[in-house]
Length: 311
Figure 1 (cartoon, rainbow, N blue to C red):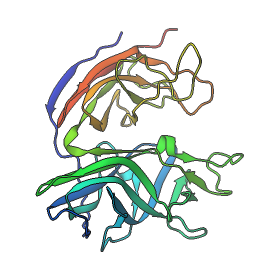
Figure 2 (cartoon, rainbow, N blue to C red):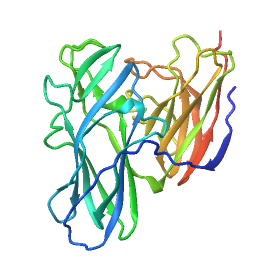
Figure 3 (cartoon, helix red, strand yellow):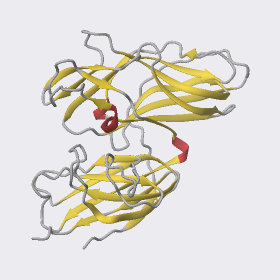
Figure 4 (cartoon, rainbow, N blue to C red):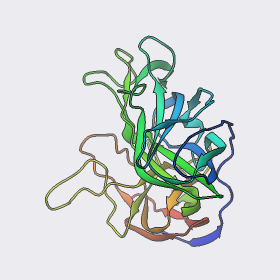
């Protein structure tokens, strides 16, 4: 049987790594605001590092041309260092003119045969190609309202599980032609998000051999499903986020945190199965998932107990 307990606590600050920059612009409003932009990541299995080289940040004011942030210091960021609510801050206390912006864009360096953006898999360093990364960048097309005489903190969440692709025919872990980053990104306002955390305990005393423990979080009330299987009778239900469970050696339980979740209703479920294996149906605990409400600046906790597998 499974045991699920819910609790809520005040959400502590999710940003722990700070990097400074300065911004300029000449939009139509005279009022200014202070803006922060951070990066975070949901994990990818089997990768040791995923490094992106960010050379610029741009915003598109409504009704005028895009503006590139002035005096931005280019930097390389290993996204795998920023999980479970940890962030790398790209812009800190950056002055921007108030108003509506149509999109935010990161400009990424991916020159061929240059060590800029790359991925390390099974100890092998492979080139990471971002199509049009230096030209059009990684664009988040959603309205951004910068308040007058206030502040705004935004976080960009990379879903590396959906974003990193091996070229057709390239074996896993090989670096014949490198890997491709086609980012799946979420841009959230830090004032309008909460988090889900908790523990996973195994009644058998330890995680089963070969277990790749993950917690899936879906929007709304749904029956948990994998990210691949789609049929007429079973429409595709993709999770908003998938987060790994940290289990220390010799421990019978582990912990997880799904951060930067917009306020709303969700379904959470645990699985030991590997969603990267073709045609594998995932076994969730509990099978129907558990409903959980996320509130702004609050942590909602869901604890899972995994039953002993049937003989």
